[in-house]
Length: 89
Image 1 (spheres, helix red, strand yellow):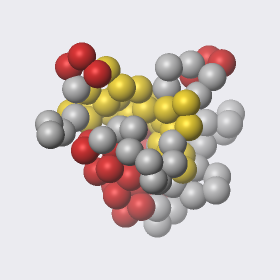
Image 2 (cartoon, one colour):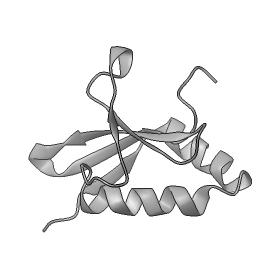
Image 3 (spheres, rainbow, N blue to C red):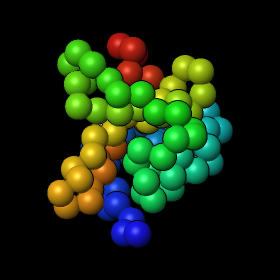
Image 4 (cartoon, rainbow, N blue to C red):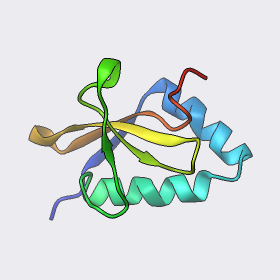
């Protein structure tokens, strides 16, 4: 099985700093490793997003924050767009 390549948006890189200061970096990294191996593995559960994030998926880091990502199956790339709350914060 081929691992997916992980790409990060500028926002996701900024969010990574917030996760470190909130002591959530380890949990986020564990989720990213699961996504790298299989972006649609269940468990842990993922959600298919709708609205302006249609085509993206999310996995919860904790009750408030989540990783939002898109999958390009054709070239095995996962682009992580956010790693903090996507509820307008």
